[in-house]
Amino acid sequence: MPTLGASLSDLVSTLNQLRNNTTDPAQQQRLQKVLRVLFALWEETIHQQLDQTAANYLAAMKSISDATAAAKAAIANIQKVAAAINAAANAAKAVDQVLGLFIAAGGVLA
Amino acid sequence: MFDRGRVLNSMHWAACVMLSVAICGCASTPSLTQVAAFGDATKSLADNSKKAFSLIDSTTVQRKLYGLAIDPTLGPTDKYFEGLFVGDDKGLRARLDTLDALGAYSAALQSLATADFRKDVDASATALYGSIAGLNGDVKKLSGQSFVTDDRLKLIVTAVDAIGAVVVESKRRDAIKVIVIQADDGVQATSRLLANDFGTNSDIPKFVKQNLINTDGSIRQAYNVERSAKNSTFDLRLTRLQQIQVAYDAEQQSDALFNSISLGAKKVGETHAALKQAVMSDQFSSSDLAVLIGELVNYAQSVQAFYGSFSTNGSK
Image (cartoon, rainbow over all chains, first blue to last red; front, side, top):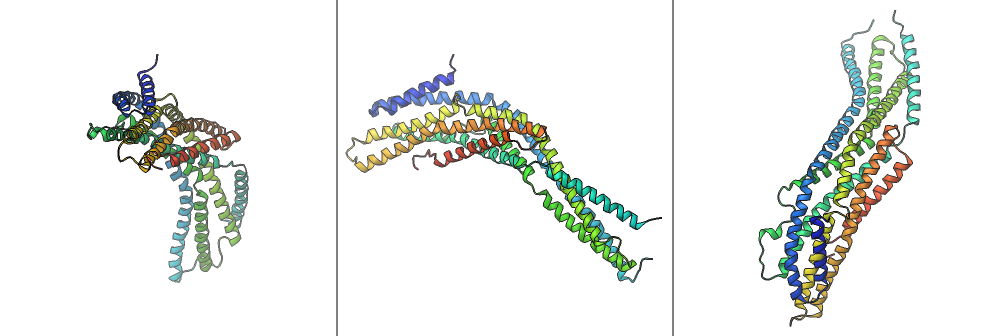
Protein backbone atom coordinates (compact mmCIF):
# COMPACT_ATOMS: atom_id res chain seq x y z
CA MET A 1 0.00 0.00 0.00
CA PRO A 2 1.52 3.37 -0.98
CA THR A 3 2.46 5.77 1.80
CA LEU A 4 0.74 9.11 2.22
CA GLY A 5 3.93 10.83 1.04
CA ALA A 6 4.08 8.70 -2.10
CA SER A 7 0.42 9.39 -2.89
CA LEU A 8 0.87 13.13 -2.40
CA SER A 9 4.02 13.06 -4.52
CA ASP A 10 2.21 11.33 -7.39
CA LEU A 11 -0.76 13.65 -7.21
CA VAL A 12 1.38 16.80 -7.11
CA SER A 13 3.43 15.51 -10.02
CA THR A 14 0.33 14.84 -12.12
CA LEU A 15 -1.26 18.22 -11.40
CA ASN A 16 2.04 20.08 -11.94
CA GLN A 17 2.37 18.42 -15.35
CA LEU A 18 -1.21 19.34 -16.24
CA ARG A 19 -0.68 22.96 -15.18
CA ASN A 20 2.59 23.31 -17.09
CA ASN A 21 1.13 21.85 -20.26
CA THR A 22 -2.07 23.83 -20.52
CA THR A 23 -2.02 27.25 -22.11
CA ASP A 24 -5.23 28.48 -20.45
CA PRO A 25 -4.20 30.72 -17.52
CA ALA A 26 -7.59 30.33 -15.80
CA GLN A 27 -7.22 26.55 -15.72
CA GLN A 28 -3.62 26.94 -14.53
CA GLN A 29 -4.86 29.16 -11.71
CA ARG A 30 -7.43 26.56 -10.62
CA LEU A 31 -4.82 23.82 -10.62
CA GLN A 32 -2.40 26.02 -8.64
CA LYS A 33 -5.02 26.56 -5.91
CA VAL A 34 -5.23 22.77 -5.41
CA LEU A 35 -1.45 22.38 -5.64
CA ARG A 36 -0.92 24.95 -2.89
CA VAL A 37 -2.96 22.84 -0.47
CA LEU A 38 -1.29 19.58 -1.55
CA PHE A 39 2.19 21.03 -1.11
CA ALA A 40 1.31 22.13 2.45
CA LEU A 41 0.14 18.58 3.28
CA TRP A 42 3.22 17.07 1.68
CA GLU A 43 5.50 19.36 3.70
CA GLU A 44 3.91 18.17 6.90
CA THR A 45 4.35 14.52 5.90
CA ILE A 46 8.03 15.05 5.08
CA HIS A 47 8.54 16.81 8.42
CA GLN A 48 7.21 13.79 10.26
CA GLN A 49 9.41 11.40 8.28
CA LEU A 50 12.54 13.44 8.95
CA ASP A 51 11.75 13.76 12.67
CA GLN A 52 11.27 10.01 12.95
CA THR A 53 14.77 9.29 11.64
CA ALA A 54 16.54 12.10 13.56
CA ALA A 55 17.49 9.76 16.43
CA ASN A 56 19.21 7.38 13.99
CA TYR A 57 21.39 10.21 12.72
CA LEU A 58 22.31 11.29 16.24
CA ALA A 59 23.34 7.75 17.20
CA ALA A 60 25.60 7.53 14.12
CA MET A 61 27.05 10.94 14.90
CA LYS A 62 28.24 9.88 18.37
CA SER A 63 30.58 7.16 17.11
CA ILE A 64 31.95 9.41 14.38
CA SER A 65 32.56 12.29 16.82
CA ASP A 66 34.35 9.94 19.24
CA ALA A 67 36.64 8.78 16.44
CA THR A 68 37.39 12.39 15.47
CA ALA A 69 38.37 13.22 19.05
CA ALA A 70 40.62 10.14 19.06
CA ALA A 71 42.29 11.26 15.81
CA LYS A 72 43.05 14.69 17.24
CA ALA A 73 44.42 13.14 20.42
CA ALA A 74 46.57 10.79 18.34
CA ILE A 75 48.09 13.72 16.44
CA ALA A 76 48.94 15.45 19.73
CA ASN A 77 50.40 12.20 21.07
CA ILE A 78 52.57 11.63 18.01
CA GLN A 79 53.89 15.19 18.24
CA LYS A 80 55.24 14.24 21.68
CA VAL A 81 57.95 12.13 19.99
CA ALA A 82 59.60 15.27 18.61
CA ALA A 83 58.90 16.98 21.93
CA ALA A 84 60.78 14.20 23.76
CA ILE A 85 63.84 14.68 21.54
CA ASN A 86 63.55 18.43 22.09
CA ALA A 87 63.51 17.85 25.84
CA ALA A 88 66.81 15.95 25.56
CA ALA A 89 68.26 18.80 23.50
CA ASN A 90 67.09 21.33 26.08
CA ALA A 91 68.56 19.27 28.90
CA ALA A 92 71.94 19.18 27.16
CA LYS A 93 71.71 22.93 26.60
CA ALA A 94 70.90 23.51 30.26
CA VAL A 95 73.94 21.51 31.34
CA ASP A 96 76.05 23.40 28.82
CA GLN A 97 74.86 26.71 30.26
CA VAL A 98 76.03 25.63 33.70
CA LEU A 99 79.38 24.55 32.30
CA GLY A 100 79.62 27.88 30.50
CA LEU A 101 79.33 29.67 33.82
CA PHE A 102 81.95 27.34 35.32
CA ILE A 103 84.32 28.07 32.46
CA ALA A 104 83.75 31.81 32.79
CA ALA A 105 84.58 31.52 36.49
CA GLY A 106 87.92 29.97 35.61
CA GLY A 107 87.08 26.44 36.65
CA VAL A 108 88.62 23.26 35.21
CA LEU A 109 87.58 19.62 35.41
CA ALA A 110 89.99 17.29 37.16
CA MET B 1 85.74 1.65 36.91
CA PHE B 2 84.07 3.80 34.28
CA ASP B 3 85.44 2.96 30.83
CA ARG B 4 84.50 5.82 28.54
CA GLY B 5 85.78 4.05 25.44
CA ARG B 6 83.80 0.88 26.11
CA VAL B 7 80.59 2.82 26.70
CA LEU B 8 81.00 4.82 23.51
CA ASN B 9 81.75 1.67 21.51
CA SER B 10 78.55 0.10 22.84
CA MET B 11 76.56 3.19 21.90
CA HIS B 12 78.12 3.13 18.44
CA TRP B 13 77.12 -0.52 17.97
CA ALA B 14 73.60 0.07 19.33
CA ALA B 15 73.12 3.04 17.02
CA CYS B 16 74.09 0.93 13.99
CA VAL B 17 71.60 -1.76 14.96
CA MET B 18 68.82 0.75 15.55
CA LEU B 19 69.57 2.51 12.26
CA SER B 20 69.35 -0.81 10.40
CA VAL B 21 66.03 -1.60 12.04
CA ALA B 22 64.74 1.85 11.18
CA ILE B 23 65.70 1.57 7.51
CA CYS B 24 64.17 -1.92 7.19
CA GLY B 25 61.00 -0.70 8.92
CA CYS B 26 60.65 2.21 6.54
CA ALA B 27 61.11 0.06 3.43
CA SER B 28 58.03 -2.09 4.26
CA THR B 29 55.76 0.80 5.32
CA PRO B 30 52.74 1.14 2.98
CA SER B 31 51.53 4.48 1.60
CA LEU B 32 48.84 6.56 3.35
CA THR B 33 47.83 8.45 0.21
CA GLN B 34 44.59 6.50 -0.13
CA VAL B 35 43.57 7.28 3.45
CA ALA B 36 44.12 10.97 2.73
CA ALA B 37 42.20 10.78 -0.55
CA PHE B 38 39.27 9.13 1.21
CA GLY B 39 39.23 11.91 3.82
CA ASP B 40 39.21 14.58 1.14
CA ALA B 41 36.42 13.07 -0.99
CA THR B 42 34.24 12.28 2.02
CA LYS B 43 34.50 15.82 3.38
CA SER B 44 33.50 17.14 -0.03
CA LEU B 45 30.44 14.89 -0.13
CA ALA B 46 29.48 15.86 3.43
CA ASP B 47 29.61 19.55 2.45
CA ASN B 48 27.56 18.95 -0.69
CA SER B 49 24.95 16.99 1.23
CA LYS B 50 24.51 20.00 3.50
CA LYS B 51 23.97 22.14 0.41
CA ALA B 52 21.33 19.65 -0.76
CA PHE B 53 19.37 20.16 2.47
CA SER B 54 19.52 23.93 2.00
CA LEU B 55 18.23 23.41 -1.55
CA ILE B 56 15.04 21.98 -0.04
CA ASP B 57 14.41 25.28 1.75
CA SER B 58 15.43 27.55 -1.11
CA THR B 59 13.27 25.80 -3.71
CA THR B 60 10.33 25.78 -1.29
CA VAL B 61 10.53 29.55 -0.71
CA GLN B 62 11.02 30.15 -4.42
CA ARG B 63 7.88 28.12 -5.25
CA LYS B 64 5.85 30.04 -2.70
CA LEU B 65 7.04 33.46 -3.90
CA TYR B 66 6.43 32.69 -7.56
CA GLY B 67 3.01 31.28 -6.62
CA LEU B 68 2.29 34.47 -4.69
CA ALA B 69 3.39 36.68 -7.55
CA ILE B 70 1.12 34.90 -10.06
CA ASP B 71 -1.97 35.32 -7.90
CA PRO B 72 -2.98 38.99 -7.41
CA THR B 73 -5.67 37.98 -4.90
CA LEU B 74 -2.97 36.95 -2.40
CA GLY B 75 -0.69 39.15 -0.29
CA PRO B 76 2.63 38.33 1.41
CA THR B 77 2.60 36.91 4.91
CA ASP B 78 5.43 35.30 6.86
CA LYS B 79 4.61 31.78 5.69
CA TYR B 80 5.59 32.63 2.11
CA PHE B 81 9.15 33.30 3.24
CA GLU B 82 9.46 30.09 5.25
CA GLY B 83 11.15 27.05 3.79
CA LEU B 84 10.37 23.47 4.69
CA PHE B 85 12.42 23.76 7.89
CA VAL B 86 11.22 26.46 10.24
CA GLY B 87 13.21 27.51 13.30
CA ASP B 88 15.52 24.93 14.85
CA ASP B 89 13.95 21.95 13.12
CA LYS B 90 14.81 18.68 14.91
CA GLY B 91 15.01 16.56 11.77
CA LEU B 92 17.22 19.02 9.91
CA ARG B 93 19.45 19.76 12.92
CA ALA B 94 20.23 16.07 13.42
CA ARG B 95 21.23 15.73 9.77
CA LEU B 96 23.35 18.86 9.59
CA ASP B 97 25.13 18.00 12.86
CA THR B 98 25.87 14.50 11.61
CA LEU B 99 27.19 15.84 8.31
CA ASP B 100 29.40 18.26 10.24
CA ALA B 101 30.67 15.34 12.29
CA LEU B 102 31.36 13.29 9.16
CA GLY B 103 33.20 16.24 7.61
CA ALA B 104 35.26 16.77 10.78
CA TYR B 105 36.11 13.06 10.98
CA SER B 106 37.22 13.02 7.34
CA ALA B 107 39.37 16.10 7.86
CA ALA B 108 40.93 14.67 11.04
CA LEU B 109 41.66 11.36 9.30
CA GLN B 110 43.21 13.20 6.40
CA SER B 111 45.35 15.29 8.79
CA LEU B 112 46.52 12.19 10.60
CA ALA B 113 47.41 10.50 7.30
CA THR B 114 49.27 13.46 5.82
CA ALA B 115 50.81 15.29 8.81
CA ASP B 116 54.54 15.74 8.38
CA PHE B 117 55.65 14.42 11.75
CA ARG B 118 59.03 13.57 10.27
CA LYS B 119 59.80 17.26 9.82
CA ASP B 120 59.34 17.87 13.56
CA VAL B 121 61.50 14.85 14.42
CA ASP B 122 64.21 16.02 12.01
CA ALA B 123 64.19 19.51 13.49
CA SER B 124 64.36 18.12 17.02
CA ALA B 125 67.23 15.77 16.13
CA THR B 126 69.11 18.70 14.59
CA ALA B 127 68.58 20.68 17.79
CA LEU B 128 69.80 17.70 19.81
CA TYR B 129 72.98 17.52 17.75
CA GLY B 130 73.57 21.23 18.26
CA SER B 131 73.06 21.06 22.03
CA ILE B 132 75.28 18.03 22.58
CA ALA B 133 77.96 19.38 20.21
CA GLY B 134 77.98 22.61 22.24
CA LEU B 135 78.20 20.67 25.49
CA ASN B 136 80.98 18.51 24.03
CA GLY B 137 82.94 21.62 23.15
CA ASP B 138 82.67 23.03 26.67
CA VAL B 139 83.65 19.73 28.27
CA LYS B 140 86.77 19.73 26.04
CA LYS B 141 87.59 23.26 27.20
CA LEU B 142 87.35 22.19 30.80
CA SER B 143 88.91 18.74 30.72
CA GLY B 144 91.06 18.82 27.66
CA GLN B 145 89.10 16.15 25.79
CA SER B 146 85.57 15.75 24.46
CA PHE B 147 83.33 12.93 25.78
CA VAL B 148 82.26 11.91 22.25
CA THR B 149 83.79 12.41 18.80
CA ASP B 150 81.84 14.42 16.27
CA ASP B 151 81.48 11.37 13.99
CA ARG B 152 79.99 9.27 16.75
CA LEU B 153 77.72 12.09 17.82
CA LYS B 154 76.40 12.38 14.27
CA LEU B 155 75.78 8.64 14.17
CA ILE B 156 73.90 8.71 17.48
CA VAL B 157 71.73 11.66 16.43
CA THR B 158 71.04 10.01 13.06
CA ALA B 159 69.89 6.91 14.92
CA VAL B 160 67.66 9.01 17.20
CA ASP B 161 66.18 10.70 14.13
CA ALA B 162 65.58 7.40 12.34
CA ILE B 163 64.09 5.77 15.42
CA GLY B 164 61.91 8.82 15.96
CA ALA B 165 60.68 8.53 12.37
CA VAL B 166 59.88 4.84 12.81
CA VAL B 167 58.11 5.53 16.09
CA VAL B 168 55.92 8.29 14.65
CA GLU B 169 54.99 6.21 11.61
CA SER B 170 54.19 3.23 13.78
CA LYS B 171 52.08 5.40 16.08
CA ARG B 172 50.38 6.97 13.06
CA ARG B 173 49.35 3.63 11.61
CA ASP B 174 48.24 2.28 14.97
CA ALA B 175 46.12 5.39 15.49
CA ILE B 176 44.54 5.21 12.03
CA LYS B 177 43.73 1.55 12.55
CA VAL B 178 41.99 2.17 15.89
CA ILE B 179 40.14 5.23 14.66
CA VAL B 180 38.89 3.73 11.38
CA ILE B 181 37.60 0.65 13.20
CA GLN B 182 35.96 2.81 15.87
CA ALA B 183 34.25 5.11 13.35
CA ASP B 184 33.07 2.45 10.92
CA ASP B 185 29.68 1.70 12.50
CA GLY B 186 28.82 5.41 12.55
CA VAL B 187 30.06 5.96 9.00
CA GLN B 188 28.07 2.97 7.72
CA ALA B 189 24.90 4.16 9.46
CA THR B 190 25.32 7.74 8.17
CA SER B 191 26.03 6.44 4.68
CA ARG B 192 22.83 4.37 4.71
CA LEU B 193 20.71 7.20 6.13
CA LEU B 194 21.98 9.75 3.58
CA ALA B 195 21.67 7.34 0.66
CA ASN B 196 18.09 6.77 1.75
CA ASP B 197 17.27 10.47 2.29
CA PHE B 198 18.49 11.38 -1.19
CA GLY B 199 17.58 8.15 -2.97
CA THR B 200 15.10 7.88 -5.83
CA ASN B 201 12.37 6.47 -3.57
CA SER B 202 12.69 9.23 -1.01
CA ASP B 203 10.35 12.21 -0.77
CA ILE B 204 13.16 14.77 -0.55
CA PRO B 205 14.38 14.69 -4.16
CA LYS B 206 10.79 14.37 -5.43
CA PHE B 207 9.74 17.37 -3.32
CA VAL B 208 12.59 19.55 -4.62
CA LYS B 209 11.83 18.58 -8.22
CA GLN B 210 8.13 19.36 -7.84
CA ASN B 211 9.02 22.70 -6.21
CA LEU B 212 11.04 23.55 -9.31
CA ILE B 213 8.31 22.34 -11.68
CA ASN B 214 5.74 24.42 -9.85
CA THR B 215 7.97 27.50 -10.08
CA ASP B 216 8.31 26.81 -13.79
CA GLY B 217 4.52 26.53 -13.97
CA SER B 218 4.04 29.94 -12.34
CA ILE B 219 6.29 31.56 -14.95
CA ARG B 220 4.34 29.79 -17.74
CA GLN B 221 1.08 30.95 -16.20
CA ALA B 222 2.44 34.52 -16.17
CA TYR B 223 3.40 34.15 -19.83
CA ASN B 224 -0.11 32.98 -20.70
CA VAL B 225 -1.68 35.92 -18.84
CA GLU B 226 0.66 38.47 -20.43
CA ARG B 227 0.87 37.23 -24.00
CA SER B 228 -2.50 38.57 -25.05
CA ALA B 229 -2.14 41.88 -23.17
CA LYS B 230 -1.96 45.10 -25.22
CA ASN B 231 1.58 45.90 -24.09
CA SER B 232 2.85 42.44 -24.95
CA THR B 233 5.92 42.59 -27.15
CA PHE B 234 8.19 40.03 -28.69
CA ASP B 235 11.03 41.03 -26.35
CA LEU B 236 8.88 40.74 -23.18
CA ARG B 237 7.56 37.36 -24.28
CA LEU B 238 11.06 36.16 -25.18
CA THR B 239 12.37 37.23 -21.76
CA ARG B 240 9.66 35.17 -20.07
CA LEU B 241 10.37 32.17 -22.29
CA GLN B 242 14.05 32.33 -21.41
CA GLN B 243 13.12 32.37 -17.71
CA ILE B 244 10.98 29.28 -18.33
CA GLN B 245 13.89 27.61 -20.07
CA VAL B 246 16.22 28.18 -17.09
CA ALA B 247 13.58 26.84 -14.70
CA TYR B 248 12.97 23.84 -16.95
CA ASP B 249 16.70 23.05 -17.13
CA ALA B 250 16.99 23.18 -13.33
CA GLU B 251 14.13 20.71 -12.83
CA GLN B 252 15.69 18.37 -15.41
CA GLN B 253 18.98 18.32 -13.48
CA SER B 254 17.41 17.90 -10.07
CA ASP B 255 17.07 14.10 -10.10
CA ALA B 256 20.63 13.60 -11.29
CA LEU B 257 22.01 15.86 -8.54
CA PHE B 258 20.30 13.95 -5.73
CA ASN B 259 21.12 10.63 -7.36
CA SER B 260 24.81 11.58 -7.38
CA ILE B 261 24.71 12.51 -3.71
CA SER B 262 22.88 9.29 -2.82
CA LEU B 263 25.33 7.11 -4.74
CA GLY B 264 28.22 9.10 -3.31
CA ALA B 265 26.92 8.46 0.21
CA LYS B 266 26.73 4.71 -0.53
CA LYS B 267 30.25 4.84 -1.92
CA VAL B 268 31.50 6.47 1.33
CA GLY B 269 30.15 3.47 3.23
CA GLU B 270 31.67 0.95 0.83
CA THR B 271 35.02 2.69 0.78
CA HIS B 272 35.22 3.04 4.55
CA ALA B 273 34.38 -0.66 4.91
CA ALA B 274 37.24 -1.50 2.53
CA LEU B 275 39.53 0.87 4.44
CA LYS B 276 38.59 -0.89 7.69
CA GLN B 277 39.39 -4.27 6.12
CA ALA B 278 42.72 -2.97 4.88
CA VAL B 279 43.84 -1.48 8.22
CA MET B 280 42.71 -4.57 10.14
CA SER B 281 45.23 -6.50 8.03
CA ASP B 282 47.78 -3.71 8.65
CA GLN B 283 47.59 -2.80 4.99
CA PHE B 284 46.92 0.89 4.42
CA SER B 285 46.46 0.71 0.69
CA SER B 286 45.14 -1.92 -1.68
CA SER B 287 44.09 -2.06 -5.30
CA ASP B 288 40.40 -2.55 -4.33
CA LEU B 289 40.56 0.43 -2.03
CA ALA B 290 42.19 2.49 -4.79
CA VAL B 291 39.31 1.69 -7.17
CA LEU B 292 36.66 2.58 -4.59
CA ILE B 293 38.37 5.82 -3.63
CA GLY B 294 38.70 6.73 -7.31
CA GLU B 295 34.93 6.22 -7.72
CA LEU B 296 34.24 8.21 -4.55
CA VAL B 297 36.36 11.10 -5.81
CA ASN B 298 34.44 11.00 -9.11
CA TYR B 299 31.10 11.21 -7.29
CA ALA B 300 32.33 14.10 -5.17
CA GLN B 301 33.50 15.94 -8.30
CA SER B 302 30.28 15.26 -10.21
CA VAL B 303 28.21 16.66 -7.34
CA GLN B 304 30.43 19.75 -7.28
CA ALA B 305 29.97 20.14 -11.04
CA PHE B 306 26.20 19.86 -10.69
CA TYR B 307 26.12 22.62 -8.09
CA GLY B 308 28.19 24.74 -10.39
CA SER B 309 25.67 24.46 -13.21
CA PHE B 310 22.50 24.20 -11.12
CA SER B 311 20.52 27.39 -11.03
CA THR B 312 17.21 27.70 -9.21
CA ASN B 313 16.75 31.45 -9.21
CA GLY B 314 15.47 31.78 -12.72
CA SER B 315 18.72 33.09 -14.15
CA LYS B 316 22.02 31.51 -15.25
